[in-house]
Length: 299
Image (cartoon, rainbow, N blue to C red; front, top):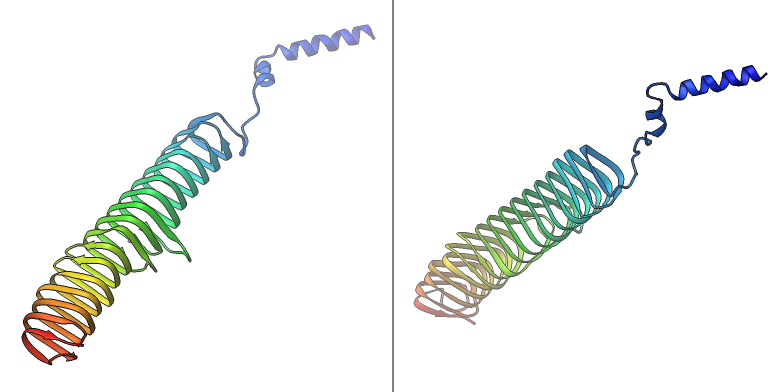
């Protein structure tokens, strides 16, 4: 009996001292998806929920829910919900992003709330609420009832299909033709500006095209309002359907509907005149004289 016990103890001791047994005994369990880390750094990071300081990866940082300061992936940084200071990567994607900044070559957010979204291409499928969206191409795509709310949207091309509320939209091409409503406190500045319904103090460009404009003035060589103009058009050629305000065109002003206000240009034409025309040639379908030189008054 004693001999068998002694033999068992010797065998157990031999197994314990065998090579690799200590490593197996002391090795931590493999990390599982859903673990939380203070700092997670590797070639590629994945976590169902990350709560800590930073998630750093050479290739990709991926978390279904990220709560921390920095998510960095040289190739990709993705989070279903991101709440932190900075998401930085060549490609950023966040279903819901609350951040100081989202910086990358291509940013895509379902909902962004923060100070700045900076990238070569910025694309928002739902809501953007922030101070600045800066990119070569800014796209605000449209599911139902979406909105862009920011102080400045700055890009070579700005395309908005949802509602747009902001201070300034600045780009070579500003296209808001799919947007249901556009309200800009400072204005829209670009080489070419398109909007469905625009409310702004100024629309400035080489060509300004809107369905309806309400505000200060459309200023450019060519200004066109296919529906209603409430304000002024100042350019070489001004075209509108209905005018409540003024058209000042070097070459001429053409309104197919009613002019309630003033037309000044070399040639002025109104479907119906309820105001004053000053120009070399003046035409009115109804109100005032059908044709006059220098001035025409209708009521």
